[in-house]
Image (cartoon, rainbow, N blue to C red; front, side, top):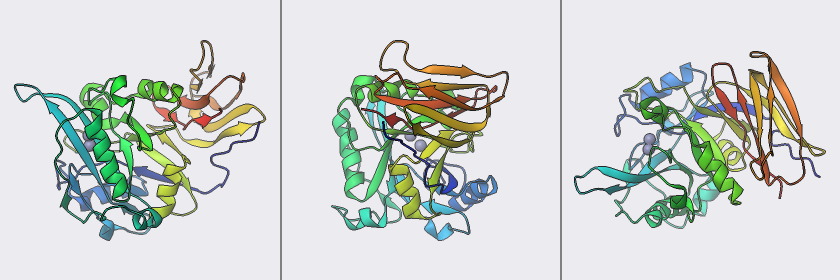
Length: 317
Ligand SMILES: [Zn+2]
Ligand SMILES: [Zn+2]
């Protein structure tokens, strides 16, 4: 079996938050304040993704910190008393220069308001994704549990590169931020999607710096970060760090900051997968020999405080 080494380029690690709200929509902090907050906390990039308003705050870029233009697009099903029954929220993040050149419709302009859509279940979600892809973006499917999504609501949805499996804001608000079950269920059905952790901060709650991605890239530039995201050369975290990960000669390996348990997740058959437990936060590496029937394998590193780092899957069949 060939080796698969997602981080073999030995690029640098760049930390970023892919989902964040400013005073342009319902966030408390201005774009300038957000850039300062994340830069001061050791981040290298930020997607300002305000509700239905596309923004480009690249004028706030600084040494070792860049803003990626973006938007959070949504469509909602309302009940008879105007209560929100279900929703889809999709982040659009501006793609590479090449993707922008190939866009099938005009690129979005700073402060452009996105067209309102009628609720039409999965079709409306697909319409949003197609609109964003056609205007040169990459897409994430945000907080499916908070959105009251059922698995069948995701059956036919295509075109998003990652599911938000940890949303700090939703987790703080109502314990609806962790959605690895949805992710595994889609992976089992053969969908090839990555996962991201993010803040979705509005700064009403203390919802900054709780979930992020670390991208392995050759440099800190818009294109290099987008390429790293699309190719899965990143991990998601609420605390632990991952230093290396891959597959060599049928064995999956991981190296990380000290954690309490390392889970190798392969849910294809009963008793697939494996958990390596340490004594307190003592584990910094683990290995797992594949049994041979796995469709995919992914790793979670969990520390004593319950903070988690998630790798992306390695697809095996
Ligand atoms: Zn949302
Ligand atoms: Zn949001």
